[in-house]
Length: 127
Image (tube, rainbow, N blue to C red; front, side, top):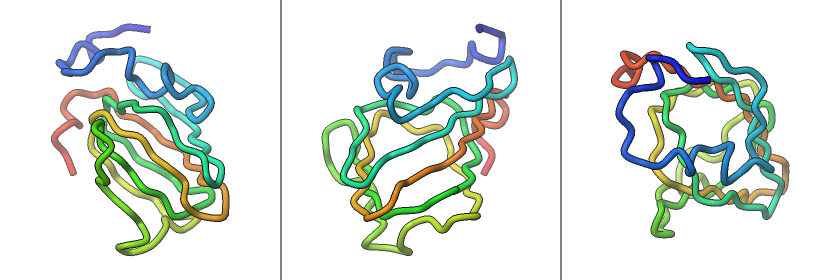
């Protein structure tokens, strides 16, 4: 589905959209011209292929686990073990669009998140 809201410039290929290279980890639950809702599931020890998230999003954590996010070159961008720890079940988080990255679950439990991506181009710069 394509709309005017999806025409906002994005420098990375649609081939890197989360549901394309990482369909085993990103399940499309709903999509329309305003939002896209994904369920993200990453088993302990598993890692996603490199992918992007074009739109800012709200994340609702169903089950948390420590993870490491790597940039496109494989450098550590975030390691939850070195900061506040894993996201807690029931927490709600905000994220801007994410450039190419991969994520590895380094915890002992399933990492499961519902992500609501906001396709409104004016949301891109909001925090």
